[in-house]
Image (cartoon, rainbow, N blue to C red):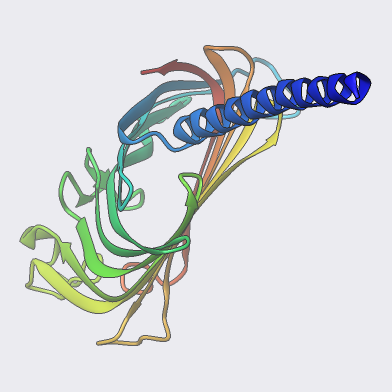
Length: 296
């Protein structure tokens, strides 16, 4: 009888110890999972930015195969300030870039000139879906010139593009999201002296603005191709219900950053735009160079 009683007490003690161990392990795992969740999806405001300087240079001297000496430089800022709560997401991004290139025996020319502000607010609907409202603004810093005639074709805030509208957003993470806005307003502003002789950037002759109403789809996807190599994709589509809805405006940007160390990287940027109101064909921009980066 004593042996049975001792065995029962022993088993009870062992079970109690294991139960405490399992409870502690479970509690620890829950705490780790909660900490990881907060780390992946911090609440409140998060801010981060990157300042980049790119440089390219080519020099030829008595080079029989031919070539033209050139030098170019670009500066850029990519800044995000986002807000998160249990029910709300508000993502904001500012992109500013300016670049110059100098070919031998030629004047300085722009190689990049952008000022972009994107804002996307969403209220939780269910799963990865949010009710959304977006705003987009785009313009340039400096004047643009026709290379053939030398006449000025654009300058700061001319053109200026505004888009805004309600919709639905599918957001799995800050690096993967799609917004669909079927009732989007679009406004294009151009100084009147650019439309004196004809249309400019889709604005009719003699006018300084153009209003459109249509549907917009905006997609964002960023991933690591391999260690220290990140790929960022930004796609914007727009169809104007009022005029030629089949002619969809396309704006796609690809940014690849190959990190060398904390401050140095090789950067590649490619952008293509199709807007038949501004130009009957694809506009393309490509920039590549060694960059000096500073995060803030």
